[in-house]
Amino acid sequence: MNIIKNIKHLLFIALVPLSACLDNPSPNELKGPELFTPVLSPSLQQENFPQLARNPMSKEGVLLGKTLFYDPALSQNGKVSCASCHEPKQAFSDGLPLSDQGVSGKPLHRHSPVLFNMAWHPGLFWDGGATNLESMVFGPLTHPDEMGADLKEVIHYLNGSAQYPEMFKAAFETDSITSSLIGRSLAQFVRTLISQDSKYDQWKREETELDNVEVRGYQLYHKHCSTCHTEGLFTDLEYHNNGLDMNYPDPAELEGIYLGRYRISFDKKDKGAFKTPSLRNIALTAPYMHDGRFSSLEEVLDHYEHGIKVNESLAPELKTGIRLSANERAELLAFLETLTDYKFINNKAYQK
Amino acid sequence: MKKLAILILSIIGFTACQNDDKDQIPAETEVNFSFTHLFNGEEIDLENQTYTLPAGESFTPRKFKYYISNITFENSNSGASYKIEDGYFLIDQAGKKEFSVSLPTAEYDQLTFYVGIDKARNLSTDQVGDLDPNNDMVWNWNTGYKFLVLEGEWNYQGSERAGLIVHIGNNNPENEQNFKAISIDLNAKGKSLGNKASINLDLEAELSELFIHPNSIKIHELENTSIMGGDVAIQVANNYQEGLFSLK
Image (cartoon, rainbow over all chains, first blue to last red; front, side, top):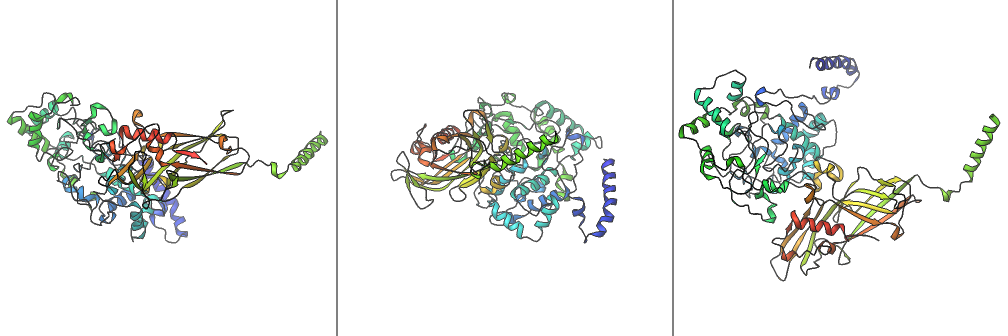
């Protein structure tokens, strides 16, 4: 790190005399985008911060991505931005079971997913169909029931705006705004959304204490939930059938949307399997499941206790259900509350 | 020794002048591809013309486009081949229907190209040019490209008009993939490469073939007029592999 700083420093010194000869160059023209890597809390239990070699994160790229994220002008009717369905206060979800806030007003078939710690997700969307953030963003951006954008019109708008051409130049050192750079800058911004400062994280870092009820809840979580909601990210990033439905209708025009991961893998064990959502910020992100069918954590726990539908692809761990006494349930819920990250949802860096 | 060298050099120089221009083999060959799309032998007129599908249904096409990639020229005697690197071309009935590629001149009598995008290149869509997602050829629910798109108005024996939607494009898993090679015998049409600076390859696609061979596809017998994956998509892909394209 110090070496990099020294190099930057030397570069800066070397460039000063040069800049004297140029016509007021902006700092960016001298050093290009300023790359950075986020600092990670050990409580995430992640060794690396994954990003694509072709799209390293830079301050300018993230700022551009953030500006695009909050810009409703990208949408067909000028009213829907990414943030319409991914609000910071709700851990970048929207609180609706199935949103009808897109440009067509038609309800979607899946619940808006949260956006945090996405850098570690090898699959995006509830079934992992998208395999990198750079490509994923074209889905919601162009889907007729979401933002409904025509990418050619978006490029036209960006080229004609007062601020964007310069921002693209600062981020990617080019005068040519393309769809691919829209995808890349949005991906950079989304990768910066890291939730790692809940009470749980502070406890893990020995900065605070959990009370007895919360600790017992933590033990219950370990016993009953941690197989899929792996500690650290609180998801195994895998896909499981958690017993919501017996059968899965498959109308052709919906392209297998009810089949879950099966529509991607064509593997029988993936019928009705959806990505394990993180338990982080779970108290903020009702309703629950891929279709938002449960409006409270109580309902979710009811499902795991006596609502499991047993079919061929059911996750074997769930066959017998998860039974908790009233006391245990309260303890588990108390622990889940410790996963709420107020610093994350109030972080100005992520907001408009 | 010096004298000998001068002699040899002058012979070389002299023979160089003997070469007649018409025997000059160009270093590069430019191959100009063009595509014409037909329905029952007549050129497609999007939106304006209604055609009869092989199973007797009416169809008014609105969109027809596909990717051509992985173009390889081959010499069937020597086995030598040349693949066009980074060659991904969108052919669109409503847009561009031709492209050109260049290769070092050599004798080739066979052509292979693929409809679609190979697995390695299909892993992301933040790409440019013909692969720019603004061409409306990327899936919105998974990462990758549609290889072939046919859309239009469909009806059968006075039924309700419905949208026929054919979106084919998958590399993964292996048993579900529909990335298909098309083989063309250049020699059979007198279009072998070897000594010309440029050659035109005019290909025709007869769309009714998508529904005939080897798989007979009767839309009115399907549960739905959308074909976007699964077995029927694979059948359509097998159909465009055999008999959709021919060299004029």
